[in-house]
Length: 117
Image 1 (cartoon, rainbow, N blue to C red):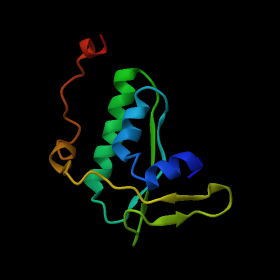
Image 2 (image 1 turned 180 degrees about the vertical axis):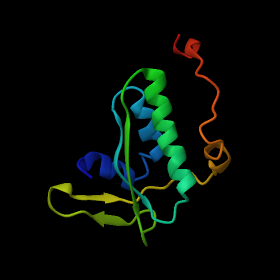
Image 3 (image 1 turned 90 degrees about the vertical axis):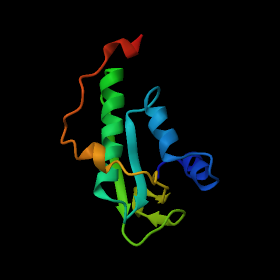
């Protein structure tokens, strides 16, 4: 919501949530002020947070996630935050479920550090 160029890229379909996650690997600290539809399952939100945590762990850096589920909004709608916060488009979220992964309850195999090579 703070970068008009990114808002324009989302609106024309050039920038997706998955691309923003990938960008975290090389240039940013995470997903910030990302508006998603309000009816997204909590397990999908947890999966997005887990993705960002994994990126931070494997790259040895701090990452963060600030998602804004917009109740009653659908992909492509705009959400006005007011004041300095501006506005942001509601972004599409991957439709595949991460429920099985999230319900593992944190029991995930240890990281493979050789992937850094």
